[in-house]
Length: 378
Image (cartoon, rainbow, N blue to C red; front, side, top):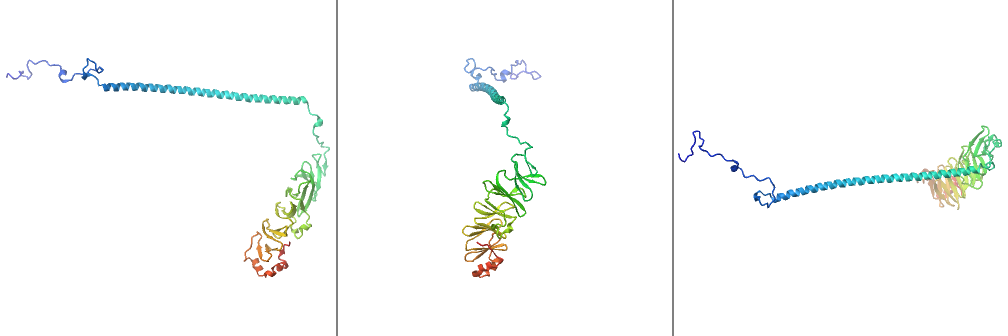
């Protein structure tokens, strides 16, 4: 068959053309690996690189270089800052050191000056020699000191002040002492160490007291039995005679209360506390558990046992003490009743009920005649 390719019996073609390089038929031509700038004359356009790609690569290279430079600048700046910090720290340390040395030098200089002055002063004192023995204060010779009723004085101004009614004496030496002649014992007092016009002891009930009368100031009361001051120096007169007219109808205060006068008014003094209870410009009086101060204008003021004022009776008014109550009558003989605390009693109180049963016209005369009602007279 003329149109068929002759083949061998094995199916292989006869007189076959030698095979060609398969790459020439099956592969596209390979691009060059060399980067060629656009416009190069010998390089076909299809083999030239994209211009945009070239710009991107160039920009990346520039940015990398810039970042590297910035990092180097930051490192240089950090280094410079550290060096500056170290320089400042060293400078501060040197300044502190110089300041410390300056202060030390000043202190040392002051110390040298003080020591120099001390040496100079002592040198002058030594150069003057010891003081003249005649300039020394006289020393008491123990053999020349007095002995008073067995009490051995320690100063040349030692003296007995007064004999006490209990057999002891008061001595003034370095201070005021109470000296027991039998026990040969001196007890230091709290009597102020000053000159007195007189120290007058007296018994007031069971208490042994003394009036301390300075040369010019007001007097005070001292409790010798208990060895302490009862009052301050506040009083011009202390009434320590129970037979004095001022204690008329109130001798029951003996040993508990005492009347004094100071700054133009009379006062009751509680000897246990030393406190003033009441005062009155003309007189003070007590009956039962109540106190009364007599003032100018024939006025009487009523006080409780603690010194609380609760009522005033004028010239034409009356005050009566009835057991634990005070009855007040005004100038029209209307009455009021007060208890020991100074509280006004209500109309239903027993005493108020009793008084209402008495005719007002005869109320005053009735109370004056009834001995159970003590009349606080003007």
